[in-house]
Image 1 (cartoon, rainbow, N blue to C red):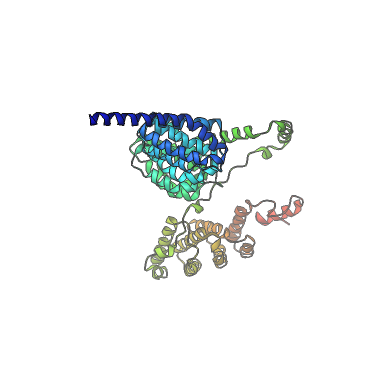
Image 2 (image 1 turned 120 degrees about the horizontal axis):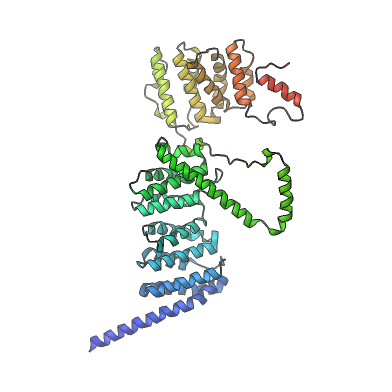
Length: 503
């Protein structure tokens, strides 16, 4: 008998809870509607959030209906009041997305998070950190019922925070063993990175995640491989081809992979341009149509060069590298070999430095390179062996390239030697000298070079100096030399730059 009463009591309790959950679904609309528009409803929102969790745990249908009620309210009220406290409901919904085994409840939870991120925009940032890892983890579910809401959810949530804030979560997701998580993370990166430019690209995060994406290109799962090509294509679109090659050097020689990556780069660029054009068209006020027509007339009458779009500058690949103290990587007997009486020993030491520099293109500016500059300059100037002199020139080039403006303090002692060595006509030395003077010249103001460059009697020195001036001056603008208002000054200056044949 007691057992019978107990069973009845349990059934009644369960029914009461079911009714309570159902009532929550019907009342949640009013409660949440108040929270969207008025801060006085915060207490009711917190209470409703707790009830939502209990309802979801006890009755899946009720939980889904409660979530849908919130989504419906959010769709009717797209802009949320930022003063209301959404912390409790974010926590509840995040738990449903993470823990609930019912795919429909999880999908509704994802849409609920999307609604809050859309309604709050940047004000959702404080909640993003707790939901992003859960979203990536749930990508292991392949069914479209959940995957599609997750895709929309991560895209919207990512817009509420700086992209660099996601670096650790992206690293974790890309390193997951599940192929679906890897593929969906790569596809998210494609959708996100294609909208960046060289000026806005999250360089720090890209340096962190690029090796993992490159690793995905060798995965056995075809879906992961294809998604990784898309992610790398969008990365290349964002930072430029040269900078991207720093990240993908491991696969740069693989023509098939590089073909896929460049294909997706072009696709990303086209999609980004189309999105930008559509955005511009939407934001153009209708009342400016008449003035826009006038502007179009002015543009059409302008010369073709004025109508050409300005090409987006690419990121300097040098900026993508971490600075390295290359002196700590030199062989123990480096300086001893460098000053060896045998030319082969000196050449091998210089080559060792060059190899280290090529592997570490960005030098640490805090290290002291004075001694090695002095020795390399001495070998270039004094050594009779043309192979040693050529290696010394390459060594100086490596330091000038690795230090950039920080090489300026050494430039004055090597420039006169470089020009003087142009008397050597053999390509074995001449070509390294050309590369060397071009690199060194980039480290100092151009005016500091001319005194060392002009007035030499040797014809070969004269010719190579003029060729250096040609390579340098062709990149200058009218603001850097002469003036459009003074054509005679320009003519005299250009004549001097191209062989000093002017009057």
